[in-house]
Amino acid sequence: MRAVGGAFVITYYFVLGVVMESLNGLVFISKQQVAKFLGCSTRTVDREIARGRFHRPVHVGSRSRFTVEDLSAYKNLLAGERMDVERHMLKVS
Image (cartoon, rainbow, N blue to C red; front, side, top):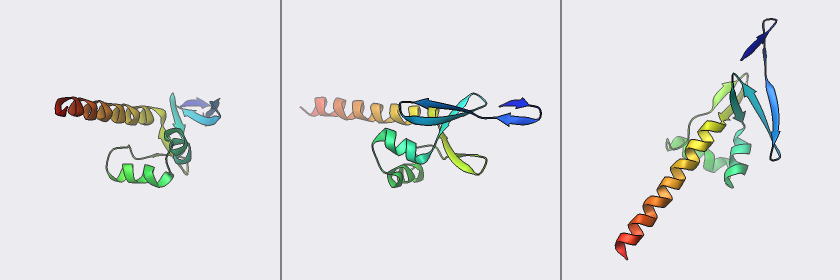
């Protein structure tokens, strides 16, 4: 968060067709953008939050946003689960 004359500055990025907000060095995206990136519905994102598998959103002003780091951690979780399933299938074979 950079204070400029007592105000905070939000920087906007346009990456891969998605507008991202940056505040205090963290990059934020909306739930709709998370769902689009993961190829699922916003309801699926809500279910993953309720299960504790995806971080709850943070509030940036009056808007709920997710950090790109949260999205990356979730993708790593999914990749780890796929590897566990593949290892299990190899043991069963």
